[in-house]
Amino acid sequence: MFTGQQIAFIGGGNMTEALVSGLLKTGQVAPAQIIATDIRPERLEYLARSFSIRVSSDNARAVSGAHMIVLSVEPQILDEVLRGLTPSLDPDVLIVSVAAGYPLSRLNRVLARTGRSVRAMPNTPSIVGRGATALALSPDLSPQDIARATALFESVGSVTVVEERLMDAVTGLSGSGPAYVFLIIEALADGGVKAGLPRPVAAALAAQTVLGAATMVLETGLHPAELKDRVASPGGTTIAGLHALEQGGLRAALMSAVEAAAERSTELGCEPPSR
Ligand SMILES: NC(=O)C1=CN([C@@H]2O[C@H](COP(=O)(O)OP(=O)(O)OC[C@H]3O[C@@H](n4cnc5c(N)ncnc54)[C@H](OP(=O)(O)O)[C@@H]3O)[C@@H](O)[C@H]2O)C=CC1
Ligand SMILES: O=C(O)[C@@H]1CCC=N1
Image (cartoon, rainbow, N blue to C red; front, side):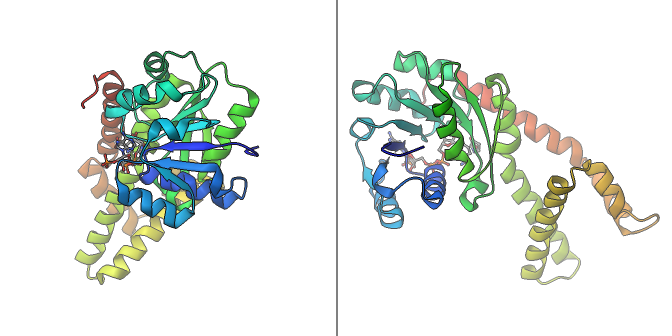
């Protein structure tokens, strides 16, 4: 699928590292087919050393001759970065953007092109191959384009295709969601420490509990409420803990977190560039 294809990653940060690592692990892409750019020389050195890929500080040169471009810089600077690519851009190149909140209509407007683009929202568990990515596809993509974009993100986890109007909601849930879960794991571990556990024991139990519970939801297909009910014995420990969570407003807090992050994603898409 990627035979003879050149892939350019613009912005050599966390997301690019996860995707480069995932793609190379599939064995479908050789290091020489990948180029990554960044403005930080230390990131370029790190990426070249870790993955033996080509690196450059020149975005325009990197995209010249590329068959697929992955845009992975902050949304606030993406307009400026895109304008710098325009002179060397093949009008037919497949463009994949992971920039939060940044709509495909804006991408096309800034690049003065009409399509062949994918808006993606991955998340940081992609770094360990357990990512969740949603893709919104422009209507003119070929089956091969869709297969390539899907393969890129399947190399680091699961892929779901959604309408672009849902991408801000996806960003609020699975894009930002790992941070909510890290906070929950930290707080559970703190609770364990408060109840007398050594910190390393509490941290390991908290993380494994979240992993195990999430795996049960995915593997059984049961409603989380059904699984919750199976943990809570009548008059037992769990119902006492659940009552405390309801009093603390955990459900409403998590719903508000997703809503606030989704709203921020929408705002980011409308904001003028910050630099
Ligand atoms: N982190 C996450 O959980 C997720 C992030 N995203 C999206 O992915 C994108 C990248 O995020 P992430 O990898 O975390 O960010 P990082 O900050 O880790 O990576 C971006 C890199 O691009 C560099 N950079 C800045 N300007 C340029 C430029 N003009 N040309 C080339 N490189 C440049 C940055 O340097 P410097 O730091 O000096 O600015 C930085 O090294 C963002 O759009 C974000 O919205 C999407 C899903 C999840
Ligand atoms: O916080 C952010 O803006 C990015 C997008 C989703 C996760 N991190």
